[in-house]
Length: 424
Ligand code: FES
Ligand SMILES: [Fe+2]
Image (cartoon, rainbow, N blue to C red; front, side, top):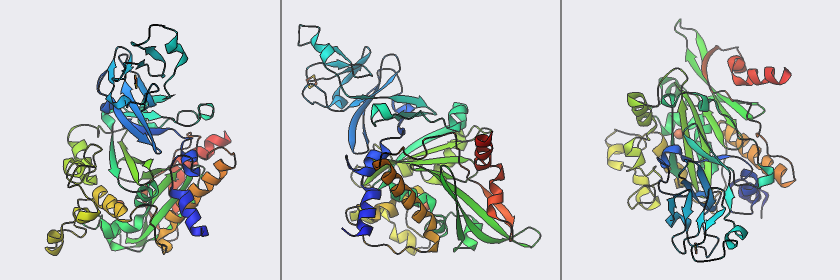
């Protein structure tokens, strides 16, 4: 295997046993929305995370359980199970498990001690910020549960959505780390600054959590002086991207398996109730995760695999007639459907031609290196990077004079605050 092929496999392959699987298993992941389990004893759901299948459920007391999908008796799927009276009951022979995998009942065995000798694989979960989080790595290596600022805002000031990409997790990260495609792929809806300079200079600064990078575009101030618009995006290990927008946006690419990703989008604003009503609808529409995006464009978890959703055979539902009529550049629904159509079009990781990266891909190169290096470090027995969530990345857009370093914009950001905190 060539060095490039080995790097590609190390970076993208999340099959069980592979280094990237073992590395990413060492972090907490958002696996579902709280609203997926609306009430105690609501229906269980299958969760696939890092190529492994689980069942998640909310028990009678409201606690979330995450268990191996296959029943430890004779392997029936617990996704078929009944959630009732403090646990989930397998419908085959009625074994009942609590959220920690303890066997509560075996109706077909008289000796009550038998149940104490068996246990269903179970994993710690948390519920915070409107999301269900889980850790599926080795129990003795479980990191502290990270605390995100959006946990602390009122429910009406945040919302989260989970959308599906038929693409490797690195592809969805790349889509949001790549300022240079915004003025091309998303030109129907991109801002004037972006359209005015399609070849921004890209500069990167290392941080404790990963890196942040600035796309620097030429602009003119209100007084007619030349200036620079710096759009700063942050990447935090393992797969989080903080994008600048009118509100705060955190995008976490959750690897389902090597060719499928759940893209968790979290929007929040301490000062604005964006999680409800018109503001929520406006944001959903803006990103293309409105009803059209979730259903017709197949972003919804319960819609993605239905017939007629975007796929290679239907050219990702690209609308050539609308393109010819000059109504749209890409022929796809705005933003996320465009990104995921393109990401899926890159094909499975097992079939990747050589790429030709250029200056504007510098953040992509940096991210790939960081992820691969982290996997090597973990394989060598070191702790995964970025487990200390006190660090909080910056994503801002600002205007600077042509001779002003963009990093001065980070002054107010968490980068500076973190430095101060670690010195204190
Ligand atoms: S397979 Fe689940 S109870 Fe028998
Ligand atoms: Fe995009």
